[in-house]
Length: 282
Length: 354
Image 1 (cartoon, each protein chain N blue to C red):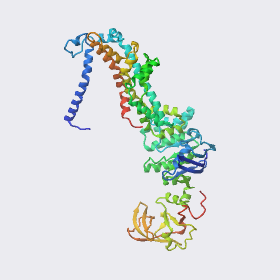
Image 2 (cartoon, each protein chain N blue to C red):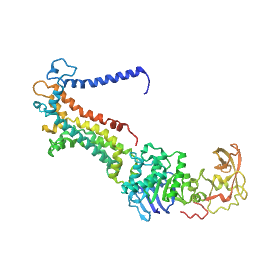
Image 3 (cartoon, chains in turn yellow, cyan):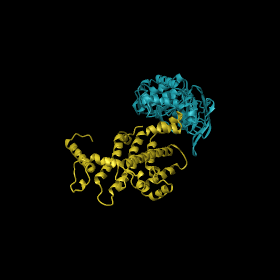
Image 4 (cartoon, chains in turn blue, brown):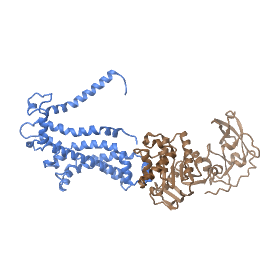
């Protein structure tokens, strides 16, 4: 589609710019809201330019939180979310790498059955099995703990499936050459398979980090102790005040802060991420 | 430096036999080529020696040690694969070093061997490149380098040249031969290309249907093919196989004195002539169908008038023969290979191989 037609490129740019504006405007509005003082947003006229309270609002949210809404300081919730998202992403990748390795490279009885059982769990998202999962986690005494927050979300059919597809494209000769070269199964995994999956791992990490970051329902269920609140559920608590209007300027400050880490992860891993999605050469 | 002995080696895939009992002893420093059509079991046989395929029954001895139960790494062999199987994320140097590192070879020893192999194969300037930055021929060299640095008891080649273009293939074939002569490492080499087999082999194993059809030096196999299959497989264009009826009435037939049981007679295209040779000869009347000039010689496709059977001659130069012309082709009795169709074997004696 490399064409040199001025009108066409003008039109394509126009469409893209309109699209970006539509997506970015609400985010901008959230940012503007987070810089104004209490009540500015409820005056009937929505301001479109940043206000003077930027530092004040963010400082307040990060260090103190809104105790009336039952929300701890934001840095605690951001920290929790970060820990949880990383544990989920790393855990999912580690487990699915190993299970895909087993399914693709080893011949054991019921191998195909094992694969299909893993695959079928794709059809059961967290929400469907949430009551029995909650029961199990509660019985194990894992409520209000990082283990309880992350463990049920770690088993991943999607990642296993993706790694399986990738491993299937690796020629058998590579494994045979490694065997002749004296590499056992673990050495082959570490020296050959892992480096080759590097870009896939990076791409999956980005996707899974965001998946872990935006978890809402599960943290809401298993945490009652504010020390384990995550930022996404925290925002909900901030917005849902019993009497009176929510303090939108503070809620929006929390929203902006909650958006930041996923954006950073995407920006910094973008190169690897894109490579992982398009690279085919082995 | 080692001998390889295969004793009654068999391999079944479920109920399907792939290798049906092979006996072979490779002498120290010898290069043996396994050749045959696809599906004849030659690759399976090689992979069994390498330890990449399990053995159904029989024994494999490398340097006198039974290795049937041993892992590939414990067999002291190195293998060169058809698609090279270089590790794509490692540089050439790391590719060469990998097998040595896994064996705990000391650093200085690794460096010495890598340098030596790089010198032999002239891949020194490429040591720090990745395989994807190399051409097919260079990758092939690296794959061989990976085998050389190991200084193994035996090299196993699995159709190493079939991914190269025709010109490079001839060049690498010569290099493999020189290299093997120089290193004097016992080698097993699998190919389906009979020209490659003829030029490389110290001894040739022609396989078909999981069995050895003939074992011998390339000239032995070419000059005295033991079976009809070998006769048709080795040589290009292939040997003409004429049924006895189609030559029975020809002049000179009575003086042939064919062994008992002969019902097929083979004759190489280059041993058929258009001119009458000195001495007794078999003369067959035929009609020219096509003349293919291929440079220094020409392939003449004719049909015998008696049985309408197609016959190919290779004749020197470019004879001036029109298609449809009637010719008489001559063969000397000594150049005829008598076979029995039923058993598939030669009917004259003195073929010691199974």
